[in-house]
Length: 173
Image (tube, rainbow, N blue to C red; front, side, top):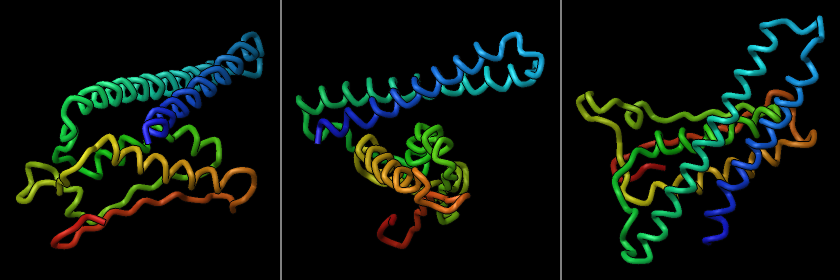
């Protein structure tokens, strides 16, 4: 429902804020420590920039969702477009990288080669018709549930969350 559509990106943004806070504390406590090198500081700063980029992307996505919901109130068919399920799934997984990292889980997105073809190829990428925001929400929700199932020692080291898309003549599955 609506609450889930809003709460999922909010939770992702809050996760990113938590990561940024942790990195800022780590950086602050490392200042003046002779065992911490400039390379260590660069690594912390790079991770912090990555967290802030994820937060920004998530909040932009949330803003887009709100604009689309407003538009759907006026036109219920708004939001249904042709889109690449692979690109949309990839964009959704980017927002979950930190959660996967924290749970020590590898996120893997795979597909039939025909689904990933570049537009300049003979056939171009496979596009589906629907609402990419809702599709991304489903991918995000499923992936968050899989990551959560791997937390708290309920998994073997090196676990993977694998999303696989395949294509037949009529469907993308």
